[in-house]
Image (cartoon, rainbow, N blue to C red; front, side):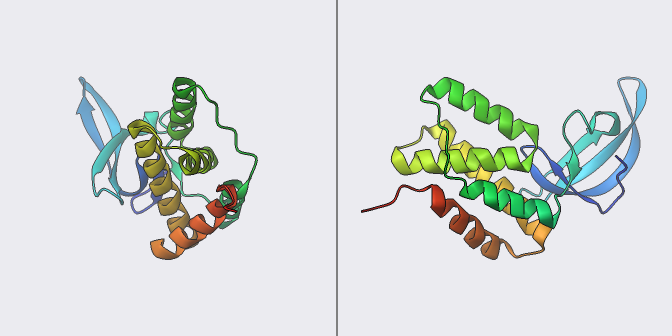
Length: 166
């Protein structure tokens, strides 16, 4: 995948970033080409070797069509929440690291559902918050919508997985 300065890309578990620079650096006695990314949410800078960009999951922001699929995924009421905390956490961590927005949306949906039923552990609460931030920021970027509007869209979609009150 070819990248250029100014491209908006997603760096798994960090979120949407803008390519600020592509340059050659000497690292470990060898020259490597690095992509310098400014992560929009945290304003931090991440350097990624171009040859590792695919391995770390660096990818372009999703299309508007994919945004619709993600919102549909958030509404799916068939929520699977394994009871084994360690297994559930491990599975969710793998989904978060995948960089696939649908997998991250899966984590968001499942943990939102679980959070409505019981109190989440500190680590799962942090993961829920992270998944929410990643999904909202990418949908906002892909759909060219302001974050508050995307928050409302995501909350509406997630309302389908919340237990109904009598």
